[in-house]
Image (cartoon, helix red, strand yellow):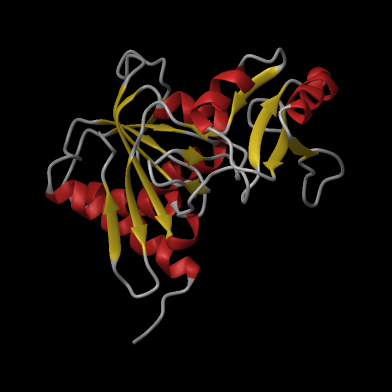
Length: 244
C-alpha cells in the first residue's frame, strides 16, 4: 500500500473537501466564499476553479485572505471581491482554509503563512467554516508544538512580548527569508511566534492576548469552530464535524 507524503495529503484533503461540498450543495452557484492561504488552501482554490471553468458552479464572489490567494484567483479566473464590496456586504456564506494545528474540539492555530489577520476576519464573518489539513496538523493540545503567531504593531513589540512572557510563552520575532529583518505582513505589521511548555486554554488565551495594547490579532481560532477534513497517510480522509 502506498503511503502518501505530506504534500500528497494536503492535495487530497483540499480536493476531497471541495468535491464533497459541491456534491452536498454546500458550495453552489451564487455563493460568497472566503479562500484561504498556504500550501493546503491552494489546492482547494485550484479545485474550485476547475468547477467554475467547467460550468458546474457560476457567479462565485470570492474574498481572498492574502496577496498570494488574490494572485492565484486572478490567474485561475476566480472573481475576487473585497469583504466591503456591496456584492459581498461584509458576510460570506462559506470560508475554506488550512491550519497549522487542530485540537480534538477543532480549535485551531493559524498564521504560519503570516495571513492570520485577514484569515480571521474572513473566518469569523462566514456562516460556514471549513478546514483542510494533512494528518500532522491533528494534535491533542495547541500551542506547545507549532508556535502561536501574534501579529503586532512594531512599536509595541517589547511590551507585548513582556506580557506574553508573563503568560509563560517563549517568544521569537519572526524573521524574513531572503530579506534582512522581520517578516512584514500584508497589513504592514510584525509577528511574534510564541510557544508554551505546558498546554494552555486556547479559548481563554485568544481573548486575553487580544486585549494587550499593540496586538493586532492572535492565531488562536476558537469562536467560529469549523468542520475539518484531514487526509491520512493511507489515502483516506477523516471528516470531523464542528462539535456541538
